[in-house]
Image 1: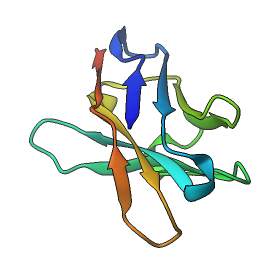
Image 2: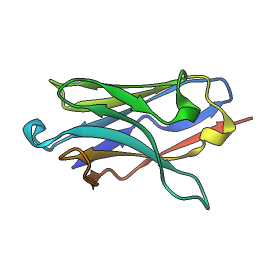
Image 3: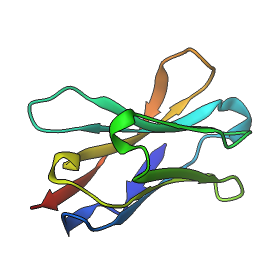
Image 4: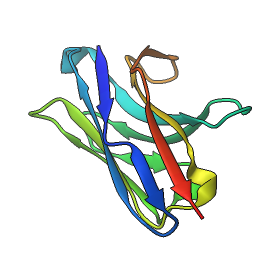
Length: 117
């Protein structure tokens, strides 16, 4: 089970920090990721982190603005979002990937992020 929090309404240029607490045991996890879905659009990958190594990767449009991190002891992944833009408005989901190259198979319920211009 994954539970996200931290969404909200923010003005353009502002910041938010999303959190996702996972109940799944870490030894069965390869990576965790953040995805988002805006109204009328398909869900898209935002950022991911390899759980054991902490290696992070991002979609191009958020590089330099968003930072994904994980707290191994708390079984939690974070997404620090800075310099937010109206086009970042979406429901953000965290997800769990058991093995590299496989689908993310556990998903949270999502948290709304709204960026006003």
